[in-house]
Amino acid sequence: MSAPLRLVLVGAGQMGRAWIGAIDRSEEAELVGLVDLDRAAIDAAFTARGSSSASGPDAVALARSEGADAVVDVTVPVAHLAVNLAALDAGYPVLCEKPITPTVRDALALVAAAETTGKLLMVSQSRRYYAALDELRRRTADLGGVGLLSTEFLKAPHFGGFREEMDHPLLVDMAIHSFDVARAVIGRVPLTVDCRSFNPDWSWFRGDAAAQALFEFEGGARFQYFGSWVAPGLETSWNGFWRAGGPRGTATWDGESAVEVQDGSGAVERLDVPHAPHESIEGSLAEFIDAVRSGTVPSGEIHENVWTLAMVEAAVRSTETRSTVDVPALIDEAHEQALAGDLRGDLRDVLASWSTPHERLLGAAVPQ
Image 1 (tube, rainbow, N blue to C red):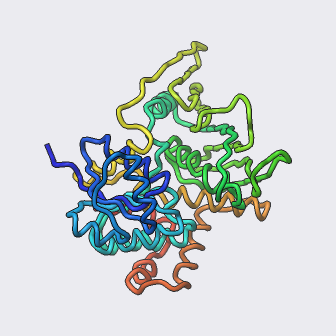
Image 2 (cartoon, helix red, strand yellow):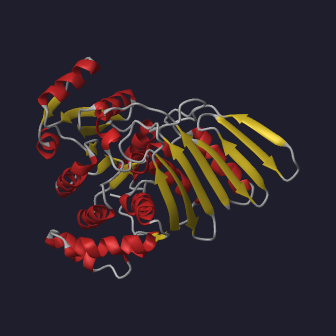
Image 3 (spheres, helix red, strand yellow):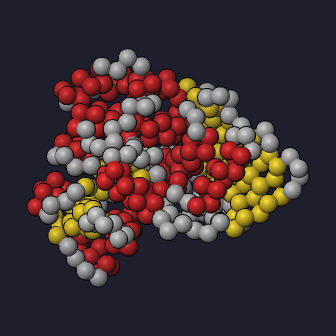
């Protein structure tokens, strides 16, 4: 048996506490340090945990002093670029909460950093890790693949704080999960999106808390998203309700454990899929640990994950311009913006060497 992977966690807020729990429950990981600029946040996290470990304001310094093997970044998105760059430059593989950065432009700088350092940068897209979703994917493959995929996401949370003040809270903070799952189910590259966001008159959000979007994928598959954060009553799962249709039938997933399948014979099969040992963020953590140990490329590796972030940015642009947005072209445009910005020399050299940026993100992963 390998010794547990020694982890330094950066970010002691609400999500940080969730990650502390996931690490403590894992037999394959050990929390050796907690980092936050706010000492009170660290103390509160340790109080909630019931025990403490090494702590401080500097992730790299703490990782070195505690002999850490890797860094987990659970800071706010605007801090991800600096935290991840520092950890990668210091030689540590990184598992980072979604979104990897607020913009595709900044995400490409981190792609370059992964290539320059040769270290793994994986994004935690935690809603990929459900046994029932795996079953949906297997069944749709049996039905001849996915041509039509749709999800409804209908919830009514009262968060308070920054989410209720964002311009596009649903698209930027939540729809990224559904967009990533769509990529996982369809297994192709997203090409275009038409999106319209809106805010019902009863909304308690300042920005648009509802949206509908239609994506076209390579090969002709379509993905339709309809979501709202102001939909009280008969709410869906936090994973949404999914329907996947192919040439030989249709499968649905309720976002929890129920999968239904109907093929061309007309017979309906109803499955109650048991939960797997590692789901949600625990699934992300397990895949990261395996990737660090084995050198395999995880599903959330930074090159691959940029496509999910690009879907979000393209959806926001589509609703703001009321037009169809080309997703690969958006990535290529972000590459030009990155080169035109204040970029470190070694990262600039990597990005400048790419001839077709969106194609570079396909099959160029850095395992570690």
